[in-house]
Length: 216
Image (cartoon, rainbow, N blue to C red; front, side, top):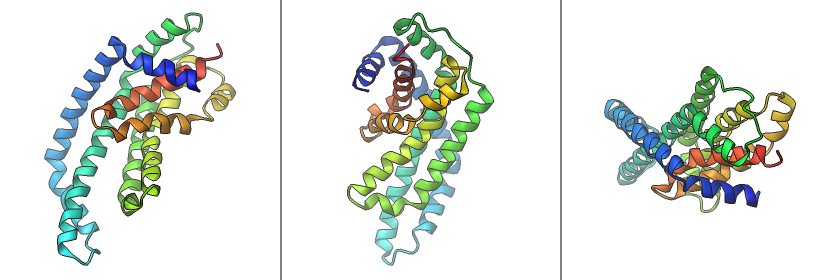
């Protein structure tokens, strides 16, 4: 796994990956801004209502402000993850040819399946985040829980996108995706660092690429 991580870190510093990340980030910023502009009032009202059980009004107000900013941040991460999943195929093929020239492209992800998996993962993440929000304030447990939540966004779409490109045997796919949760959690560590969080989705894709092809 150390070699896989090292190779992946080297790849994300390459010009082609940096350019890809910039394009996805720009598009994600636009989509996030539009969403917040249209649904910001509803979102703020929902969060305020959700926190109404807190007995102190000042804490309700502060908590609602913090939660609204946190949800907007999470939404940005979700959108980056979804757009990465939809746009990453040419980049993965290019990196595979660079590192594993003898490995042929076995297929292509179905765009409908990619969209479905990405939206399903995003909705599951947002629901769990909203309804387990108080857990985040528990030291250590909260940070581990948040890391696992972030991994939900990356796990299924990443495993599907990469494996569909290079593996046609479903049994092999099942075997190769056993560590997809660990890979997604490693990539999700980027989300703890502002600015570097934009690399998390593509880093997960590259990590999984090197993991499934490392023996070929």
